[in-house]
Image (cartoon, rainbow, N blue to C red):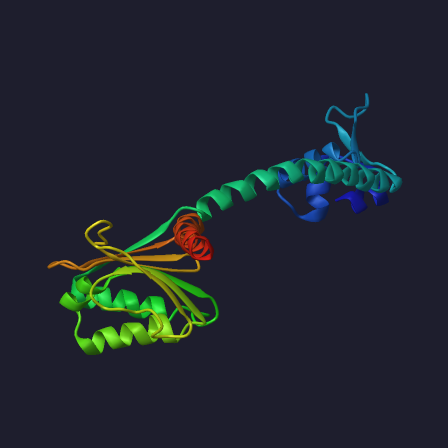
Length: 238
């Protein structure tokens, strides 16, 4: 339509519609858009009751592009603030804990299996808090061996607090453990912490598990365990 008006000088909407074989509604819609872009102008003459439309010089395209460039630069400057706000929204959403539940003995076994099969499980430190007496009540000797194999011997370092009749000190070279007095400091569930994954296994008559994936929760529990080991080591050196 712009090229047609450049060629013809000026035309009425009816003449444009006839030449381009377009509906009049389409003609008026496009003319309005071109007018807003300052590419055409409306002309009224004494001879024509209806207005004519005339194309602006092609140099107007350069002005249009320059105007859009300025608008884009302004939008880009504004977008920095908007993007930062949207990133905060996403970050806050991502920090919400992801929680899963496991019911029964098979559910707890499934949770432990998922935990020990985490990608990179043998490359970082694994943390734990557990009661051997509770584990013995729920799992067979073969089950316990499987848990020890995956949660202890597979890891470069395993740091844990535990209670029970078993003595774990020195059993594995990559293991750091502190045995606690069950009567003074009762442990009533099994906890495993690896990366951002925290697993709580309640080993009662109706066992169930809770898996929470959240960096803040995991870091806090690991820090508490590390703090106890630091205190123990400092007491040994005195």
